[in-house]
Length: 265
Image (cartoon, rainbow, N blue to C red):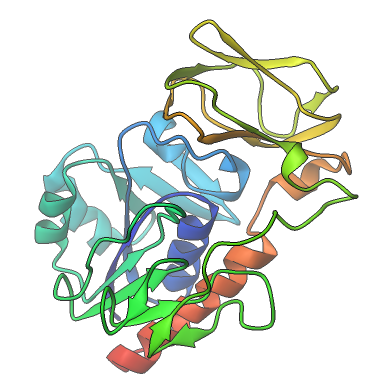
């Protein structure tokens, strides 16, 4: 059993945390206060706002204090999540592995090596042997979820995978920075042009008709250009909840990397 610190509570980070926990590891998830991830039905993000969240039957619970982490990890009932200072969380946990699942597509990756015996970087920008010990591919394709021991993950390119003919047009990106306000919920049905949320005086409309697969939490702090709304045109509420195919394949790669590097299954 390894102690693993996962950075990022979005759909990818949450899938990684879930699968590592199911593989028998002790896991803690770290994120910034009031994180702005949109796919909350596929993530543990709501635990940072509401105290608890459940993903595929696994509960996550917010640690109110650094001192709460050790007993929560030892208890094992819920995956602890924390928005305390990252360095303090890492020092309190003493992780065997660190996984950067923040998926910061356009930002230069921070060096992870040396912060834990095993450092795993997910996606574009990470180079195995430079930023991280190993990298896991996050781009759609045959290599999705592959463990990269030498070299880099694929560069960010192209549009999102289409759903019923809709790709990037099913998303809304924040036009301004500020506090996201909405009274709607994940899975709600909307029509194109409906007001979904507001950021300050800016109205956030539904881009197409369908159900809300992604919706940033009310009260979250968002930056300019952040993905805040996603509409699924298929209209199936079930598609907004649970672990998605892409996060699951990435998580499988992380589990494999941990098992190989640390010798623990």
